[in-house]
Length: 381
Image (tube, rainbow, N blue to C red; front, top):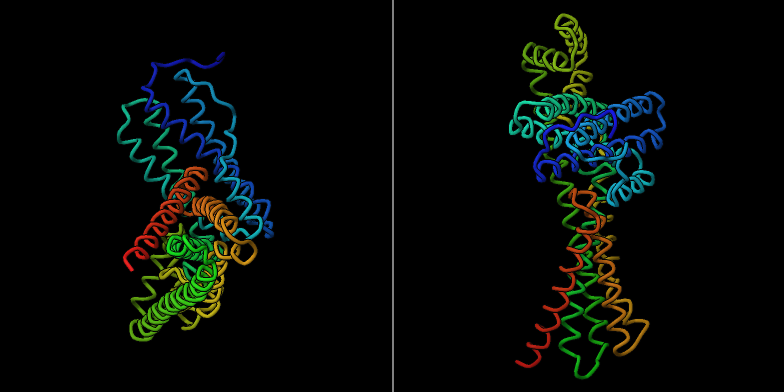
């Protein structure tokens, strides 16, 4: 540890927290590098490269703090399994998905670092936390402007929202129909009547898919109607109180860092064209961009994902017979639960393995409960 002055050793809990931040910042640097790779616009690519440099400085700050407390760490942490999965998804679904996720992550970092600053005694750790909170706040604002400026989504219908619907639709279909299949197996185990399993399972596929499709459609339609209403109100405000709207628009520009005088002039220019003014207020004040899909498409996407998840525990009964079909269905469903748990970790922020194990346990619980409920009902009847 030559070149590093070892300070008074922090307690193990604090060191573990600092190492966690070191890993998080390493993951962020890696993901911004992925963004720079998948982005096609050269200006934005350069923007993301600068983010990589900033996050690398954050990594170095935590590494220096750890080394001063006797903990030797490398230059960068190896990307976690969840981070590698996220990068894989970004390369296939485009930068919008990853950009939205990183925006949320930066906001979480600001809150975390501010709490760390408040709870830390005076010293290097306190100063480091404050510096990183300030830089992350500016970072989050830059990402927000990039997202809203390009109209990424209706909050749910961009790349990240669509992928989320696929994952959760698949998860709901898999879990619900797995429980149904297990229940019918429990009810017919004594006779090995797998015809009943197929009938119930396929009925579950159709019913679950239609239910989730209609729910996805209604949710997207309701959200679109809310946005349409907000836009209509904004249009009325521009017509009825243009002076107040012009002042509000100037304040928005000032908040973005534009000089007050220039912000007022820019707002006045924009307000001369009511349609342009409406577009600007919708984007800057309401944070609404152009939708990337429609309620019908979103409902169909959710329904198809649910149908695929529902079909997995049923399919083995169409290929195998007897106990073999039951065990193959169990293995396929449990492996799928683990896989979808890993996918959910992209949105929940939990570790991929831990999230996969959690869903594995949920699936096992559903299977056991369904089986014994089916067996119990058969005995009662």
